[in-house]
Length: 62
Image (cartoon, rainbow, N blue to C red; front, side, top):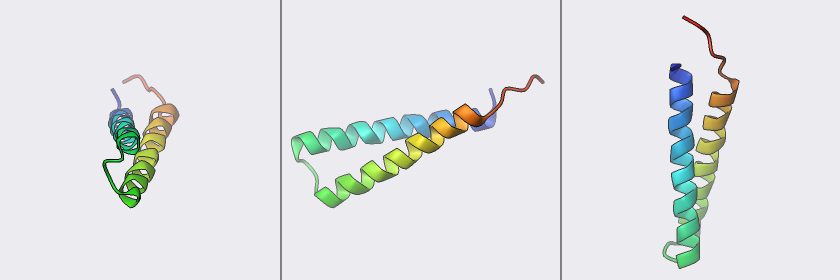
């Protein structure tokens, strides 16, 4: 597996975890609004960057 694809997968998973955490915090009102907004934005950046790396990296036979 390509290193860029592995890193993209890790970023995507971290983004999904952050988005789930943000959603749970919003539903439970367990965190301040600014904290939830910052975590949500960072998670969206991680997720979109990870998906972009996985999508744009070409498989090359060794």
